[in-house]
Image (cartoon, rainbow, N blue to C red):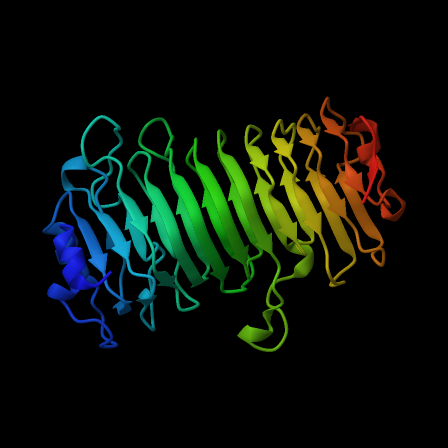
Amino acid sequence: MNSTNANALGYVVVTDYLEANTGKDVSDAIQSVIDSNPMKTIYFPDGEYILAKPICTSGKPETAVSLKLSNFAILKAAEGWDHKEAMVRLGAAEPYNTIYRNGSNYYFEGGIVDGNMVANGIAIESGRETSVRNVSIKHTFLGLHIARGANNGSSDADIETVNIVGNNMPDSIGVLIEGHDNTLTNMRIAAVQTGVMLKSGGNFLRNIHPLFIFGYEYGEGDFIDYSKSVAFHDYNSTNWYDYCYSDQMATAFRLSKGSKAVFLNCFAMWYSKRDNKEVGFECEGDFNGSILNAKIHFRGDVQNTAFLTQPEGCGGEGIIENPITNDDLIADKTYKKYVTGKIIRA
């Protein structure tokens, strides 16, 4: 889509107000465009836009906007970025939460958000049924943050086809979810210590694929302690997972005490030996969840292997139905006390 077509669709084109590819900070100019065009779609043509500070949209319907980026439009954090907040703060300018008024369902779509190895990417800070879709988030410490919403903590965000590559630093996170009732589908997340961290319930995740990437692109050796890497760290107990896939992370799924999370058709595998740990499900206490048709495939040259592990003395009423695994390579056989159906050879 070129600028003429975007204008014809009623979009506000940022390059009518500022110039891309200058290498200079345009955050104030972009913020001015956002603030001056309530209830409009703001369109960014291909090009690089340097941000020295966060840009904020409003959660209030009357002043909300949608941000739409062309495929190769890049929002890039400036050298010397010194802000804890994300580069793009959706709903931060005027926090609000409603579904009843025009402008309440805004979105961020397309393009690239480049944290330049120092910044966080996108945050949803208020609003209702906010959508983030078809965007690549690169070189961030925290890629996507869904904060607690204004409606009793519910954020009700819809995240679709978002790819995240972190900065490969200790404690880095792909997605942090603190609001309730969100849907995440079709994501790949790499170069982070934790793929998805959930501190809330009522979330549904489908086809989410965190993978451990060795950090040689970022310098000599790895900055992340591989043994601490985890694809999904779930602090709550009421989330749903469907075909979520851990690729080479030391621990695939880490669950809170008494977790009642539901896992359907999930998968974990390790394609090379990095450390002496391969764990499918690590429960921090009693296990009360449901794991159905999960495939956990071990390499065979690692000693610390477990389909499911939990502290000594813990139990629970959870079930593992029809697990697909190579049982002869599993050192910790805890999972067997929860198995119903049959164990299928991987």
